[in-house]
Length: 74
Image (tube, rainbow, N blue to C red):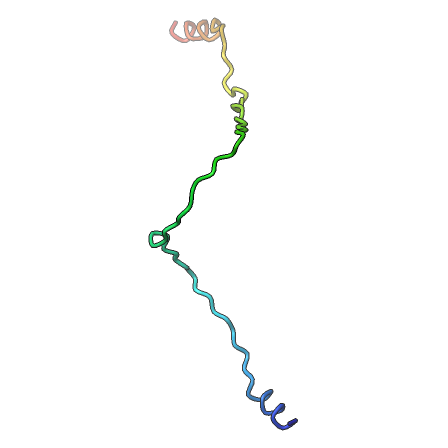
């Protein structure tokens, strides 16, 4: 009996599992039967729009730039 045990250990090989790099599943061939169940009470939480700070500063007074422009033309 010990002899068989030693022989089995001697012939044992480590098998490494190799997985495929890509697996494709064809869902077109599946037929799913059932009925859609809607929730009895609808709770819909809408996300509020995110408000971003404007990176553009609106200026109402361009007189300094206009004066510089007039000086450059003269």
